[in-house]
Image 1 (spheres, rainbow, N blue to C red):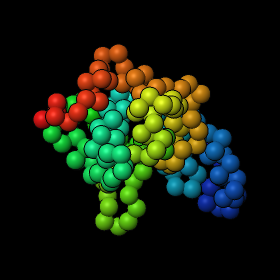
Image 2: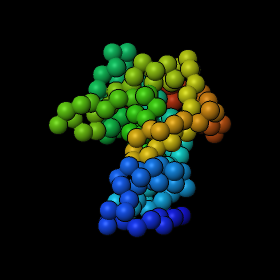
Image 3: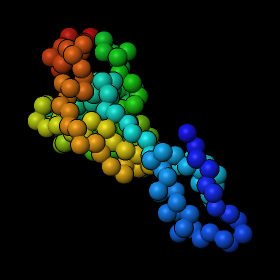
Length: 167
């Protein structure tokens, strides 16, 4: 819920630094920015099952050389594609994938070494990232494995089998 700022704005009564401090203090619950009037809020985003599926598929498609893969090719031609989502791009906030830099590389991603290790079961990551203005400002203390993120209704071993099973 948006909270109104009880300060006079626009007549020089509040400095930018003061406005910034007010926004930072109210961003967890959400507050109207005194400069632009938009909602300023910290969002808590979960590493959910569909994101975990996306990451597993990306790791498989990218191979050991961690090649760049377009998002549409990650999901293409797999039985699990309908279970995955384009929320996979949020995995950059956990440093599990990276976006290809450059003007003509939109939609191109590759798993990081950390992302591959997470998929292989070698490490756990925070279950949630806290985002402000689409930038990470914190992480939950709760850690999850790839199997935790996929949930009990999803077969990790089936997902990780060779591509021949997917065709």
